[in-house]
Amino acid sequence: MIDTPQHTSPDYAFGYSPTAVAMMSARSAEESAGFMLVHLKPGMRVLDIGCGPGSITVGLAAAVAPGEVTGIDIEPSQVKLGRKNATGRGLDNCRFEVASVYELPFNDSSVDAVFGHTILMQFSDPETVLAEVRRALRPGGLIGFCEIDFGASLYHSEESAVRQVLFTLRRSIRHNGGNPDIGRSLPGIIAGAGFDLVSISAKYNAPTTPEAKARQCATMKRLWQDAAFVDKAEELGWIDADLRAGLPARLDREASDPASFSASTYVEVVAQLPESG
Image (cartoon, rainbow, N blue to C red; front, side, top):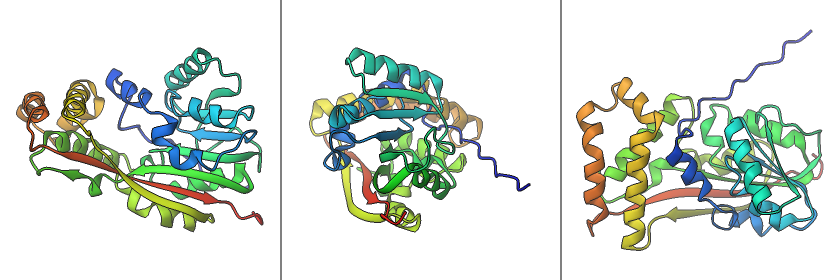
């Protein structure tokens, strides 16, 4: 008997603090999966891996109705939120399950499309995740992945308080074995996993008004104050107590500084499984 390698899902660096969940819940399919929506058609069976609270999943479900969309996440609290979200919208073609991306709850060649948003960056072995995606996808089926590239994001200066928050998160992802700069490598990783590239795009997410920048800084402040990755960063000596205590005030000042600027970089890839499988 040949032993099957056992995979353990990594710690989720972003975490499930109230602020983190609120940030994930604010995402929509139109904003975060628009590059994939144009390829979806009514009646398709879609899988959203690492779905979080399901705010993107429900938009995918609306796009393919009456086709079924399933969101999976390893965290039960997120699956519960997803179910509540779908029920609140009256969607009967959207369901959620607790499951690992290493063991998708689908038969071979049984789904038409797979979507993932900032999920592959969490894993040291995204190729293994994509192999499991490929197993569940029918020949000719589509995948769409959006991944951040922290290293290619823009900040007004190295002293940016927003940069400090996000680069602490970046270091936490890397510490957990992930790749926080995976965006630039995403097309090659997906092509190397046996998919034919359909489209590649990149975008910056940035606050577009002074009011939006103030909201961003307020969100970063709350995240800094309640996220477990900040506790871990101080424990590991990446930041000291003074930096941690002083950053909220820096974020307050940055919110009203007309010279401050930040923009996060995302890479979006749509690809197709060859008809030959």
